[in-house]
Image (cartoon, rainbow, N blue to C red; front, side, top):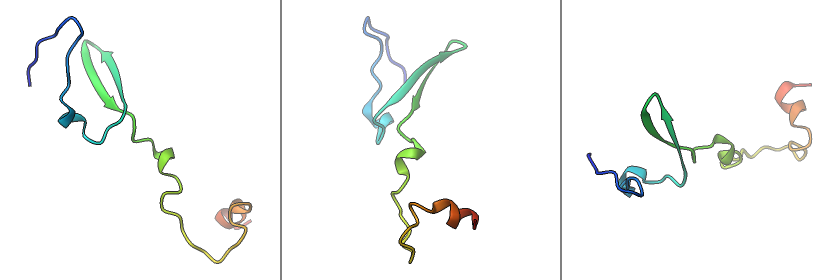
Length: 68
């Protein structure tokens, strides 16, 4: 895709950014990069919880993870 650079810059079509809410724009060695940053794995923590027969797993997680 080619586009002209206006006084405001360029417009990137939404179809190239589908599902992306935020990007980081960088210039490295003369190359402009648009990098999605909304794929933060921390945001996904707890999205698929596991059901277990333990009532104190959140308080004693080290005990269960490391068998201590």
